[in-house]
Structures are given as structure tokens and as C-alpha cells.
Image 1 (cartoon, rainbow, N blue to C red):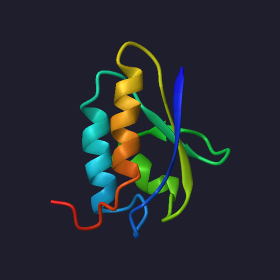
Image 2 (cartoon, helix red, strand yellow; image 1 turned 180 degrees about the vertical axis):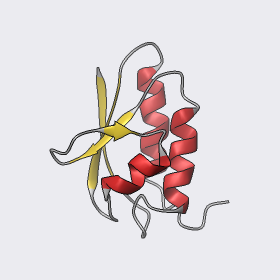
Image 3 (cartoon, rainbow, N blue to C red; image 1 turned 30 degrees about the horizontal axis):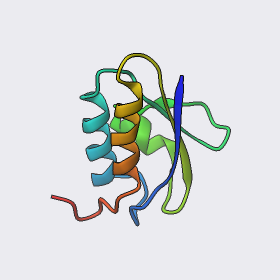
Length: 90
């Protein structure tokens, strides 16, 4: 199991547009990626609803986890998205 800790950079947190972009990218990865905040139960990063119910706000640290072949590269990609201000991304 691999893990990445990353700080949410979008001003609206992982809600609305940023959640949709992260979920779409996570769902396209070759491994299942989960995301959690603090000691909460992890949710699937490929689920918009899961990301929105996580309640991750701007500046919160989240933990991404995945296992299997390609997990490290997939986590790096999703971590980079979460660490980017996606509020006005095209």
C-alpha cells in the first residue's frame, strides 16, 4: 500500500468543480485510489459524491492511498491535482 499526504489547494476545497476534476482523474487510473481526512473512513477518490462528503476544505491535509501496479504514479498524479488550485481550471 502506498500513500501520499497532500494539502488541498482549491479555495472551495474538494467540492463542486475541483471534486469533479479529481474524481474523473482518479477513476481513469489503473488502480483504485482512496482518500481520507484525518482519521476518517476513506472514500473512493473516483467518486464525486465521496469527495464532496469528505468535507475537505482549503488547507486541509488529506491522505491518498492505493495498492498495486502503477499505484505510485497514480498517487503522484492525483496528489498533484489536489495540491493545485482547481477552482478555475479548464
